[in-house]
Length: 294
Image (cartoon, rainbow, N blue to C red):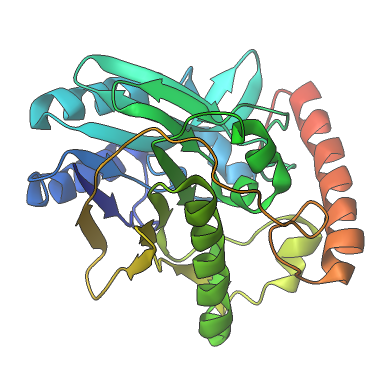
């Protein structure tokens, strides 16, 4: 099977414009079997309440478009969108093939001020095997491993919209490599890290205040773990590779640092982040009471 990662440009505004731009890239890379898009690929990654304007009831727009693309180009496709369901917003990712949508996964730990949080599953059952999907932040937490460790897995997808400090390129690249290498060795299957590119709007909360807008942007750095090696994206915003998909049980456990896959900053993880999450949940619930008026 040939799999192709497309690093979606975050600077494209509006779902209709984004879908047109993404299809152009699919057309240019149609000699493939599976297109992997990034987190929130059809809406764009906007880490504040401005993102609500692009919400879709039940992911209806993205589901229809993904199925159309799958039929038109005879491919599988993974895409991310903002799902509105029962008056809540979810950061959602789906997989479709020419027969329709095969399943969806919601981000368990999204930005707490704009999305509903919860303990959601990570498996989408497909004709090519069980595919584990972990959206951005979820990929770095133990909850992902706990939810898939007893399953047979053929492929692990990690769609991201990860703002990175461009002055810490080597450190962030090492974090990515450690992430996919760890899961690849544990499950002996391909692991795909697909990250968006482009500028982002200011992020809400304490975390946003720590991010210098002149330094942080979506830098891509997409890559894949395959047969013991890591293949990095080069100059273009597309990475294509061939692999054999075979369902396999976990080969070994993963060592975690508490709930995290790497050590990180104790101050940020134990103090700043919990405060940010609690404040965000309160703001989200208040916005919900007010009908999510921006």
